[in-house]
Image (cartoon, rainbow, N blue to C red; front, side, top):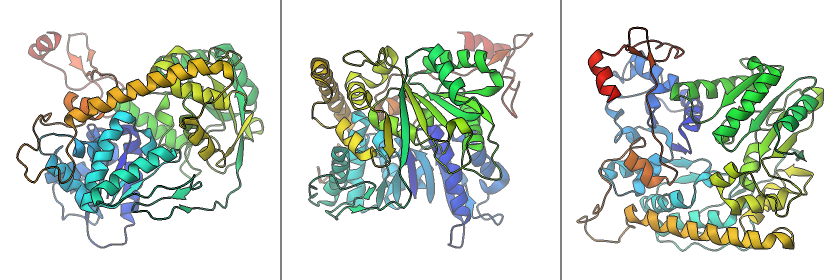
Length: 509
């Protein structure tokens, strides 16, 4: 099995769950397992599996899973029997790159599960569709998971897989229902009847003001509770956290975003699941706490809060965030017995059209934010899961939304979004692997390849993801003698690896 997720953090969270499942696996013998992303060595569970000796001696001990030394390389990590990795590992199978045959070999004998499949933008989707095309040709079973997938996207994913099987995809008339299981090859969609009662979430439209946020939290957490404030940019996370620490104290606020050191990010995610995860004997849920986070909490982390405040985001992502509100059955304080979400992050809820703050527009673009605002501006509540499918389909349909006065701005935003999508699709074609049967020979198959790539290489990340270029740095501290040390707060490795004068000189250059 290959389990692919959007980010390294969500991959780390899933790795523990897959390991626990493998420990109960009903087949005798040992199974090779791997964590496939660029910072796997910082995952304590995986590193512990390696340090305990299973890495070097596949036959030792009574454990059911092993991490074999031969599978430790970047090119060979996908060859283990069970792999949990980032989506990049699957997308690389559609990228013209050196040793791409090992990527195909690693996927060809497995069941491939791709979680949060809605999370991949138009650029990444070109590589995802081509990877599905090849997996279809190999006859590999693929499971795609999403709670907020538009009908058009679902049809495109099924068609990509069927194209590799040389099977005509039958077009479905109308929406198939929600939740629903759809299959390739024209299988009839099967809607799943839910036994649980629907949940009504109250929506409060708040001014984008820290004073209003503090008053809202004080009102609803007056007798306790755990809240999450979700911001669309790291700078807004930091600004909000600074104010809330001043108001409620440092011990009552946790900060989570993507710019922490990798080791700190893993520790924070583990701590979030421990304190705000499913009810269990091992949980340590506080009586009062506020988590201020970026989008890192909206996918694949099994956390549960009593109250939520969220920046305006595309409608499907707002719904993803609401999945962390009253997620589990538990006793809650009087002020937060019923689920409630405050929507912020707009210049004014009374403007025409409602415009998101600048940082959010930079992240998501005007088009999806305007359509989300049109769906949510006058809405006092959402019924989940009943409203999920209708909202997602409306958000990504071509029909006009909102009052007449909004239409000029929405048409201009839609035209800009279409032009950007066309450019990104065209750019993705340059290093996209050809389709099955495009040539009867391997000669020239990798012409114009990007060479050897992996998730952390600039070439690899730049080709399968179309985000802004990032710069990874090594954080060190300098002691009184001028030595460079690892940061003092890193568990188990604080203040180590003092660097030589020669290294310091090279580092400064």
